[in-house]
Every structure is written in C-alpha cells, then in structure tokens.
Amino acid sequence: MTRPDTPLRSLRARIVAVATAAVVLAGVAVAYTLHAAQRAQSADATSEFGLDGGQLYFRSTEAGAGRVARLPVPGKGPRTTGGPSCERFYAAAGTGLCLQRRSGIPPKSYAVVLDDRLREKRRIALTGIPNRARVSASGRMLSWTMFATGDSYAGSSFSTRTSILDTRTGYLIKNMEEIPLTIDGRRYHAPDVNYWGVTFAKDDNLFYATVSTKGRTYLVRGDMKKWSATALRQNVECPSLSPDNTRIAFKKRVRKGTSDPWRLYVLDLRTMRERPLAERDSVDDQAAWLDDGTVAYALPGRDGRKQDIWSTPADGTGRPTLRVRGGSSPAAVR
Image (cartoon, rainbow, N blue to C red; front, side, top):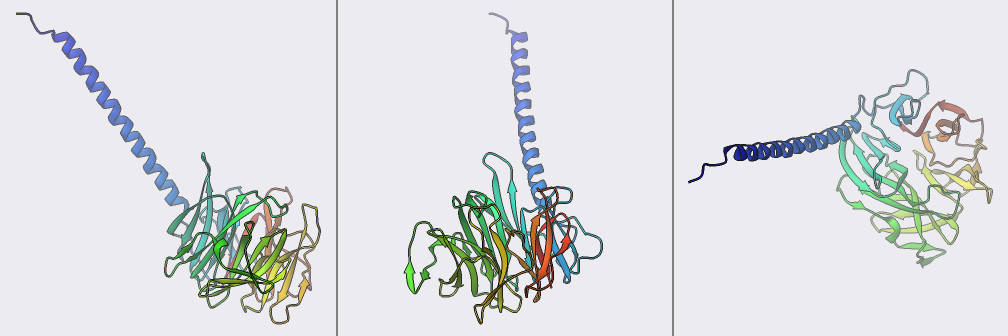
C-alpha cells in the first residue's frame, strides 16, 4: 500500500484556489466596469438645472465639452452650465431632446428624451451622425435627423434618416421616407428621397420639412393623421416655423459649387412671399425663433472650429447680433 502523494494534492488544491479566485476577481472587475459605465452614461444625461421660462438654452462649446447651458433670453447675465452633453439639443414646454454620439467601434448615437429637469426619460439607439433636433411647442412631438452617409448638405453625396416620436403615445416613426409624397400634384416615387429638418405646427399634427430628390430640394407640408406630405415650393432647406405659425425661416441655396451656398430667408405662409434676412454669411443650421420677430442660428466662431450663436430680425431689417460666444443649438423656452 502506497502513501498518498500529499504535497502533489496540496499543490493541485492551491492551483485550483488561485484559478477560482482569478475568475471571481475578473467577474468583479467586469461587473464594476459595466456598473461604472452605466453610472457615467446616466450621469451624462442629468443636469444641475431644469427647463425654465425666459431662458435661452444651447449647447455650450466654451470648454469644448458640448454640454447644455443657458442664459436669460435677452442674452445678458452669467451663463449657467451643468446640463447633459449633446451633439444637438432642443427643448420646449418641459421636454428636451438631446442627440448624443459616443466613441467606439463602431461609434454609437442616441436620441435622449429629457424631462423638465433635464433628466433622462427615454433613450433610443440610432445610426449615423446627429444633425437636426426639434420639439413641438407643446413638448409632445419630437423629431431628429441623422446623417447616414456624408456630413454636410453642401455636396450631393449624403443620405439622411429622419425620425418622429410622439411622446404621448410612445409611437416612433424610425424613418420618414415611406410617407406618401406628392410633388406637382402627383404621387412621387424615387429611391433617392431624403427628408430632414422637421418643424411642427401648434396642433401637433401638421409639420413642415425638407425633402430632396433628383438634385432639388422642396418645402413639404405633412399631416400626421393622414400620413401624407405635399411639396409646396422648391429651394427650401431646414424650415423653422414661427411661434405664431404664420412664417417659416429657412436657408436658401443662392450660390452653386461653393462651400458657403446658403442665405437665411423667411417665407410668409399666407402670401408665399419670401424675403432675405440681414445675415449675409452662409448659415448651415436650422434657425430657431427666439420670439415672433427674431431668429437665432449658429455660425463658425473666430477659431473656425467652435460656433457662436447670432440672431437677426425676422423681417429682413436691422443687422445680426452676437448672442452667445461658443454655442450652438439655440432653443428659447417661453
């Protein structure tokens, strides 16, 4: 009878114990990493302040962080910071919309619905690059546009995907391209149709947007209940409906073959007459109305990278005024 090999058994036991401990520690590390990531993501969509009337909210780029900040609507007083980090932002009537983009392979994008304290209510995973964001005056209807390919409207090699969310019912339209479209009185079909820049009427049913096809852009009026869209006129991009719902601010292509082709105009929906605004620089933005007489928009800043927010009278008079240094995505909460 041979004696048991006690040292060998002891060694095997120690190896098993070490391996088990390593597995446990690895699991704890993974769990901690995931928990930390979730906490960071959650904290990134919270704010130190809420949506209050009489404030101009915007994406602040002063420190390069892209976090939501605010100022009194006249643009005077200290800047309040501490909002969520967004690529595009808009807010109205106690509802905020924050488009985020996160690095990774591949990068991830999200539409984050925020409440009146800028706390996250819903997060929707997206594909592409955040580009436009809008909230209806009641806070019910939300829309966003993502660049699926390309990153500029100046050229022709781009594709967009525009979504609409009804926050009351939770119904999400992931892509508007299937909406029945009428151009020149006829139902229109084409594989190159792209929508962007939705703006909602006060009834939360009618909306306006840009559609492009065959190298042309159109202003379309849509009806949510009928789920239809009709082209009204050509050469209208990124419409923005005035608070009284009588006019649309938009960018019009006035120069071809350049990197700065647009100028801001305002269209009277009753007469369908348009007039250029005092801003002569090319504005690649969906303008926002500060009130019934003033529109705001972003332009490249002095360093060529960051943006500044400017405003100009909506009747074509006056001159542009610098509102916010180092800011974009203006939204006046009334």
